[in-house]
Each structure stands twice: as structure tokens, then as C-alpha cells.
Image 1 (tube, one colour):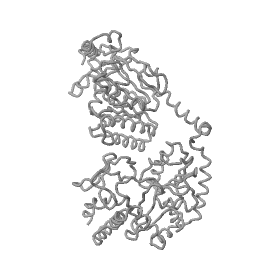
Image 2 (cartoon, rainbow, N blue to C red):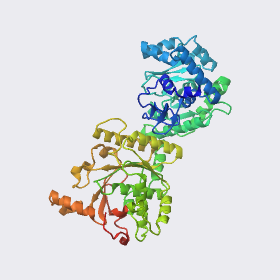
Image 3 (cartoon, rainbow, N blue to C red):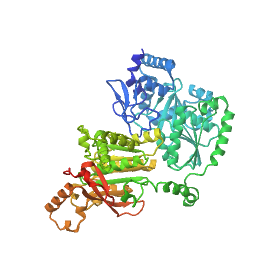
Image 4 (cartoon, one colour):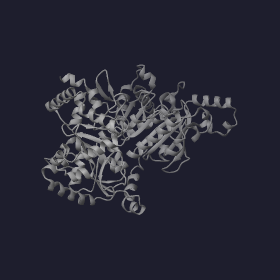
Length: 610
């Protein structure tokens, strides 16, 4: 029977209102999946998430949905499918068919009218929630599925929750919003996980309560009107505390001051306290209301309040980045690396990837965490480039190139250089991306990294034109959508995101300008810093007087020079002076950029340039 239940995941997912014919939101409670990244694998009879990597069978999903383990979980699975077999249709499927027949609005209203005198009313009363509180907040009951029906006010949405086995059903194909009850104008909001906990806190005296439900924590930034303080009431277990941390992180991004607390020991959640001792929960709510008022108020839209309450903290946050440097001495004399969206563009084969990867190595060496998303080159190529670069910088005699290393070349000092590079790049992560990799995948990976490590990484994406947008769009619209989504990722997490962009072929013989950036006008308006790499030859006055063919020949020769003479041009800089230029010598054979003002022993690269 156990194997039979494992094989019936598709049926169970359908009962949950999930369309298994297309991607759906990840069922992993620890994964905030804004863009559906889980799918049902018919061959393996499992649900797999391509973002966080979880692989679930029927028991895994039932454990998440029903909150049961071990023998209790197996017993629940056995009874569930026996009931389905006997009823021909599961209770949830019956309820879904009923809703479709009479319409969503009529279904909710019918269930609300059926609440009083129902098993659902007795169930909630037994959990300490009065009929008055339930009815006032739009709770209904569906006798056919033995489920409570929670109406989401102002959103034309609802969910059902079985009173027998805690199974939830949601309207198929719709995104779950936040469950908000109480007075929305209140400046203090309680935030919890489930609808019954939300009702419990309201019952105990809280004025405004929000439950994230299954919709995820990222929606909390959409709270309107925005509270100035929040009290996060976690479930009293490890998973509950982690969820509380994610809630706190999301609320603090929009500058809401947070008090995170748990129920007293011996109680799993707020409803446990209400059932056992309603006076205790009421007393706790009063105490929490006073305690949260001792925190500084969150940011307000009013300028005077902002100056009084928030300005100093934000100035201190910004100033702490003034000493974060790139490792390129000439660039560091112009700017620091502040949180923002940076775009680096250049024509083909000019060294964009090398510059970005060398930057990643230098940041890692200085202690910054780096996530390098590579959509063109694999980890072997990038790591061997890094080793070759290090050998050149150490002026090792007969230093090997990256391709020499990959082909098995051996010289004295290679093993030492490999070990040294491993330590140098110990804070760097290279993510090999397929051509199907989307912006949503990047966002999911970065958020999971931040959540698991507690670190704020520098994110490098190589490169923009290969990264697929989260939705199917035309080329230009897709790239603009990518830029906006990456800017959103950057601002929400207060990190550096550097995106490499190719140039229009029409601009290959022109000076770097905004028109050079391929297929995207959005870069000019969305990016915080825009850099372009160009050959110094193009910037010479005489270059403009050449014919098209002469220009192409001049560029060809300049790209063959050893080293290549390049300059980094700043077109936009929200953090200081723009319109600066930094000269570089680019030793292509050894994947090395050297600021033109620095001495470099050229004897290591005497042979024919690549």
C-alpha cells in the first residue's frame, strides 16, 4: 500500500487544486517561489523544483500539508485514498466541482451562511474562536468537503481547510494573497503563518493581523497602508522560527520595525495558547503591544518623520560601503562599490568576461561573497583562467595559459598556484547556467543563498542577452524586463548586481554611449552605474577621420596588440562623479587586466598574442 500511495502524487496534487500540466509554485515551505518552478514528473511520479532542487513523492507533500509524521502520516495517506476510492471523488474535488457549478462568489456566500450551527462552527469554538469573531471575518463552512472556508477580503479569493485532516484547497490557477483581518488603518500589525492563528490573535485583542498562508513572505512589502511596526508571532518550532526570520527580513526591507516573538514554552502556536488559556493570550497581546512601541518607528512617507526617525540610520548604512573597493587601483580612486545595479558593456572579444571574473576574484580575496552566474563559459574555463592570471601576476617563468592548463601542461609552480587560487577564490561561487536559465532562477538562487548563509553577495551575471526573461516576451521587451527584475532583486536585498551586456553591431566602430547597449533602452534609466569598455584607438581624434574599412582594420590591429590598450568609460554613476575614464592594459593571453598606472613585468608574456 505504501508504494501505491507514493505513485498517486498526481491525483493528490490535483485534489490540492494544482494544475500538473504546467509549472506550479514550489511546495517547499522554505522556498519563497515567486515564479512557478516546480513541475510534476510523470515518469518518476514525483514533483521536482528546478530552483531549490527538492524532489517530493506523495508522502512528502502530505507531510507538508497535513503536518503529520511516521505512522500517523501513513495512516492518513491510507485513509485519504480509501475515502477517495469509496467516494469516487475526493471531498476536495467535490467542493471544487460545486464551486465551479455555482460560481466562486456564490460559493463563498453560501458557505458563510452555512457556518452557524455547522461542524465548522463547533470546530472553531473548540479552538477558542467565537462564532462572532468567525462570522465578522468572513469564515464559512462547506458541508460537502467538511472544510472551513476563509474569505480574503477585497481580493475576491478564498481557501478551504478540512477540519478532519488539515488539508487545504485553493482556487486553481490563482495566486494566493495575504490574509488580512481587523483594522487595516492600525499602525501596528501582527504577522503570523496561518488563518486560524490570525483569528486567534484577533480574538485575544490584536487590532490588525496578517497571515502569510501559502502565498509566501515576499508579498508583505505590498501591505497597504504600511504599518510602522510589526509583531511577528512564530510557531514554536525550528521551521516556525525560520519562517519568522524570513518575515522579519521582508518587513525590514520596507523599513517596518519588527518584534519577533514565540508563544511560551509548551505551546506550539497562538491557537494552542488560546485553547488552553485565553486569558494568557490576551495578556501576552497587551504586553507585546507595549513592547513593540519601544522600538523606533519604521519609515514614514512624511519627510519630517523620515528625517526624525530614519535618516541617520540610512546614512550610516550607506557610509559603511565607502571603503568597499574593486581591487583595480585606478577605478577605486574614482568610486567605491556601493549597493546598486551595475552594467558593463563592450564589443565582442574585448574582455568583458575576463574583467568581470577578475573583479570577482579580487572581491573574493578581499572577503566579499560572490555569485558568478555564467551562461557562456563553464567552471573549468573560468577557474583555469583565474589560475593563469595568478601565475602571470606572480611572474612565474613560462607561465601557462588557461588552455595550456586544461590540456595538461606542467611547469614548476603550477601546483602551488592552483592551491593559492583555491584560497583566493574561496568566497566565490560559479553557477553554470544552461541557455534555459531565467531571471527567476537567478532571483531564487540569490534569495536562497542569502537565507542560508546570512551573507550579502556581489552578484555577477554573464551575460544579459543570453539570460531568458521569466515570461515569454519579444527580445527587447524581455531584456528590459530582465533589467527591471534584477534591479528589484538588488534593491530588495541591498546588494551589488553587475550585469554584462553586449553592444549593438552598429556601434562597434563608435565611442561607448548609451546607444551601444544592445536591445535595451531600459539600461539607461534603470541601472545605477553604467560602464563601457572600449579600445583606446577608437578615442583618438584621427580615428573619426578614417573610412569604415580603415576603422575596422584599426580595430583589428588594436585587438591583436599585446597588451591591448583599453579604457573603462563611466556613462552613469548615481554614487558620485560620472564621465570618468580608467585606462587598462589587457593581456588577453593570460586573462589579465592591469591598470595603466601600475607597473607589470612584461617578460612573462613575450610570445605571440592570442
